Length: 480
Image 1: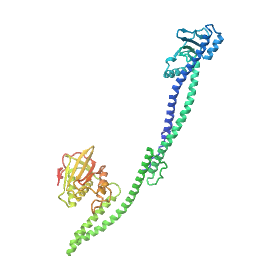
Image 2 (image 1 turned 90 degrees about the horizontal axis):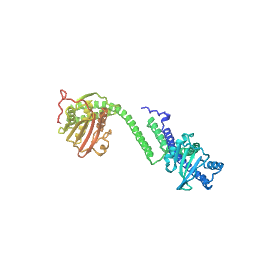
Image 3 (image 1 turned 120 degrees about the horizontal axis):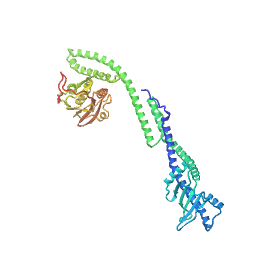
Image 4 (image 1 turned 135 degrees about the vertical axis):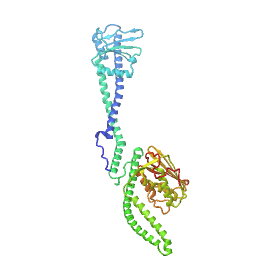
């Protein structure tokens, strides 16, 4: 399979996504800093005007009630940054200090005594949005004398200018801090996360392009999850590389073995013909040895045939049809008992009526024959077959009462050329698995031990049959 092309979408890389998210979070952090700071600046600026207005009004009080010079009043009000101020203390009220006698129309009244940070923030935003509005009335308690309430009027423009200047300072400072923090965060995440993931992705792409090519080990040694992922991928690649190397060697060996086996079958066929002639010899000793020679040659031919079938490249060729399971089990049981030379063995079937399979009947006959024969030759006397439908598949369990598989074989019973009995080819289960998988099913060793062995097969289900086809026995409860 050709390697998948690397994605070439500039806006979809992890680094660019991280950069965008960092910028978004920096802006959100700046907003979270700016708004409360702007509200605090508004509150502090108004409090400063209250304290300055109180000091200006004290000059009027120091005059003993005599009117001040208008120029002096204007200078005091200018220094305080207000247009009008009056003081209220318990028991008396000081006359207002104003620039002239003309009344001032007020647009907004702000009481600093009940002004919270949230309300100050909203107020500052409204003031900044409208610079040319009416003057603002401010009521607050003086820090000079907490018992004095200061009531003053301020033009709107100075407040807005002060708030805009404060906002500019806050934005500049916050932007520098946010950008510096975001840059450090981006670099840290890129070094710790993005770059290792990019290297891991590149390693996977190189492995996909050439799985058998060796790759240099990663220079990064980490004990966190990224390091564990890198180590796991490296271990997986090494395992797959070894498997590919082993399979390529086995494929080459299988091709050579198939050629040798083909020639060997010709030689064995000639030997078989000669053995048949020996059985007709007039010498009693020759006639006695002929059956043993014939049996040995037949076993050699069978081994050569199985080896060629296993070494044949590509999946088995299937000729599917729909057929009932019960007659197939009965035929395979009879053939296995005859091949093992143990007619007393018993094979039973427990399955629903009309249970059918859609598969290659001859291939499944070979699968069941291999399983039954292995069990009988291992010493099993009873083999129980149970079948049931499960989500569009047929699950078949084959359990025997034999001694179980050897420990070395139980670890991987489907590995080719390993056998649990003397003289076995070690190909029966391997061929059975290939045949089952060719049908889209699976075979697995469910359990093995001193009390017996159990294999489980899953195969595609065929349509239910009301009765067995003509010429075949109905599904038996027990196949003798």
